[in-house]
Amino acid sequence: MRSTSSTIRTRRSPRRATAGRAAAALVAGALAFSLTACGGGDDDGDDNDTGGGTRETTTTVTLPKLDGQSLEVAAVWTGAEQANFKKVLAEFEKRTGAKVTFVPAQDPIVNFLGSKIAGGQPPDVALLPQPGAIKQAVDRNWAKPLGGEAQEQLAKNYSQAWQDIGKVDGKQYGVYYKAANKSLIWYNTQAFENAGASEPKTWDELLSTAQTVYDSGVTPFSVGGADGWTLTDWFENVYLSQAGPEKYDQLARHEIKWTDRSVADALTTLAQIWGKKDYVAGGANGALQTEFPASVTQTFTGGDQPKAAMVFEGDFVQVNIGETEAKVGTEAKVFPFPAVGDTAPVVTGGDAAVILKDSEAAQALATFLASPDAATIQAELGGYLSPNRNVPNDAYPNDVQRRIAKALVDAGDDFRFDMSDQAPQAFGGTPGKGEWKALQDFLKNPKDVSGTQRRLEADAAAAYGG
Image (cartoon, rainbow, N blue to C red; front, side, top):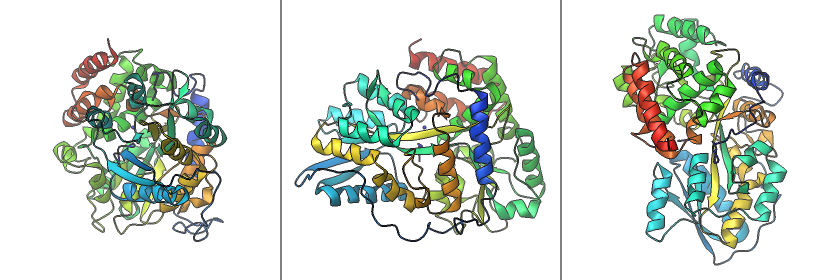
């Protein structure tokens, strides 16, 4: 999942710069508290329960009858993520009588959409994983503003920050249907128990835990380096915690250069793991041939000898864990990305529904996706997180997911959106180019800090226009 996965359309900060370290510390602390007991039961029930059995379908939004109308919806989602979203679309079909076809898209989705539009066959709605892509769609006159019904649902169900990151020049174009908490490290509990390792809270403790795991005969980390976006997520968490939110916002807007000392510090910190011999499964070459889904599954297969003990990524990792015999909350647990600086990082991502062909049916689908109804269906299926604050928390299928979801909703406007997703897609969201390629090269040669910075700055300057 390019979670998604993935701010800002105007390339402004996704939240106010004044919401600084104290707010981030509060959110990170709440997240840490909510995840510490993820292996044990509580009043909500077993870690793998479904929150009280099958939920009756709820209706909180009125949709028009659309018999005979058809829609195409494009997204880069594959596998279980795509299958689960199709169940949401099936509910929309049931309520409206419309026919909805899912169109699998390729990354980068802006290029895919450009080809479709050039051929005169754009999808009606697209799920865009980068706010920068929303702005591109608006600048190219592809995207259509949301109507009053969709905006009403957004106002009811979303914090102001989640509404704002779907706007361009003050107009609402995007519905953030899917979110991601991208500040999590998942671990194989058997590997930790065998090593006598414990969950770390700081970067130094993470390095100590990694050494303990390594000494037990298991490689500490699995890295899906074939997908460059996973590496940008590593960088962003280290940078946000180490450099702080103000610097993070400045770098996201390219107001400071990638040759800045703060970037060098973050890359040097990353090299403490990426450059440590035998700390990454398969070494650098192996990691660069490992796609994200495999980076997860190889952490939770192999019995007492998995290929790695830990894998970093967002809450959506649960979908891939579900493809193994490991169960979230028992064989697979999670802890917040440790604090590198004063506070632990809180980085989010998301996918926004954007209308490309304006019609009653397209507007109705955007309204449905902005309602709790749609999100609740996918929440129950697992591997999904919604920024919609009116999705019942007990809709999520296990205690771990419920706690992650609550931490996101409780954060309100206090979060930082994925930095690479704020960038022009040529820099922050294109395979084999820009930040993805530069960090893949850095994974292969973590000693080349200054050279990596120069390449990052040259690519960023070209993408941002100087």
